[in-house]
Structure formats: C-alpha cells, structure tokens
Image 1 (cartoon, helix red, strand yellow):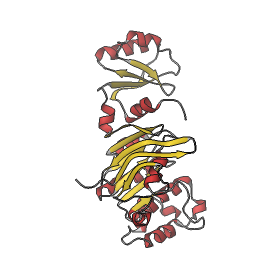
Image 2: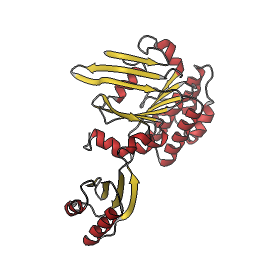
Image 3: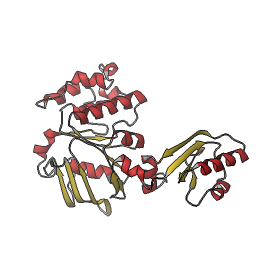
Length: 306
C-alpha cells in the first residue's frame, strides 16, 4: 500500500493555557478527499496549519507526503497547495494576473484561464482583488491553491459564501482533482458538502478526534431511521413522545422542523399522522430518511451555538 499523504499521530499544540490539539491522530490516504469537521475551536485550523508547516507541534508526530512540515518545509511546499482564508493577494492585482504569477512558480501548472472559466471568474477579470465580492475571492482562493497542480491540497471552507452555482462548480473541481490523483483535505461547516464529496470524514471536538470513517459508516450507526416533517413551530411534543415507543425520540430543530429518530415502522407513522390530526395541521415534507452526517455531527459535538 502507498504511503499515506498525511499521517498525524498524537498531535499536541498549546497556546498558553489552551490546548488546541489534544492528541489528534488521523491518516489521509493518497488520491482521496478527506473532510475535517468540528465546531469553532475544535482544533481543525491548528491541526491543518501544523500539517501545512505554519505551526510547530508541541508533541506528537506529523508527516505530509513523507516529510516533516516543521523541518522540511522547503522541500514540501512546492508539492502542496493551500487555500488561504482571505488574503495572500495583492489588493491591486486582477484574478488572472495572480493566477499567472503563482503558476509561473511551478514546473507543470494548470492553465490559469481554464480555472477562471471553470470557477466562473470570467466576469471579474478586470476587477482588482480589493473590489472582488466575498464569493469571487473565495473562488479565486480555490484556484490559487490548485493552479500549481499539487499532489496534496488543503482547502479551508472552499464554498463559504458562495451561491448554489459557485458551490456546484467548486464541488466539480474537487471531484476532478481526486479523479486526477490529487489528495484533497478540506474543512467545511456544510455537512451536505462533506457527505457528498468525502471519501473519509474526521470529526474533532475539544481538540480530539471523536469519530472518523466513511460517510456511510458514520451515518449507519445503529441502523436507525429518521422521520422528518415540517409544521407550526413550538408544538408540544409531550403527547407525541408518550404515544411513541421507548425506542423513538421526537425533537424540534430548527423551529418548525421536526424529526423522529429510532426504529421506524408503520405504527410510528400512524401514530404521527394521528397526532398531527389532533393538533389540526397537515405535516409537510414528511419523509422517512436515514440519519444524515449532520445528525451524527450534532450528536457528537452538541447542538448549542458556538
């Protein structure tokens, strides 16, 4: 088996009294898309910045493409691409100028104009970086990370703030990179994006890995199903819960969106529709689904805002 693209074993990183990475271990296989997920403050950025060579670990072992990012950065940097969150561009430069500049530093870059067309940056060709919209800067950041044709690319929130067309274009580019043998490590707060794109998912919480696996493995759980439906917000679920079996849980989140988790059978659906009739409303969007990655993520990291 080929050497993994990324190996992190027992990573520890502290900032004063705060431990951002508390024994993080993860492996990224070559030619795959791996999503690193977690709430703000979970240790995602610290872990990836250590892999990129921007931070030195206080403990543990990190290898990226077989190299130590902390001591062999000069050898590693030409082989990886890194998407920066806002910044890294000359304020007065235009998108194609920046792409051609970065491409000139690499031996076998992608064609900058192809990336401009692929990511819908054509209308912004005459616009300086300082005047680009947030979504255009985001797409340019993705393009700059991949224009050098890296073996491994780190994408930090690649579709944050993008419209549906921009998100889909970015997804297609990530899929094409994987098909071309490029290893992709991404962070995202969009669970549907992680579920759609990723071969492997790592969930961090309080500086530790709390779950990892393929999207199918993580969502399989105990093979429980979920019934989802919409109705008036703030309904009293007490009578519904009492009518359901002990194996089922009824929840409202967000307001007006309800779900029942557990072993779903015809009796559960009959109980639900009877309860809706008692409360005088027709459940809209009623569907029986398996648990999503978002359900798993919220169960592991909590549902409170951070």
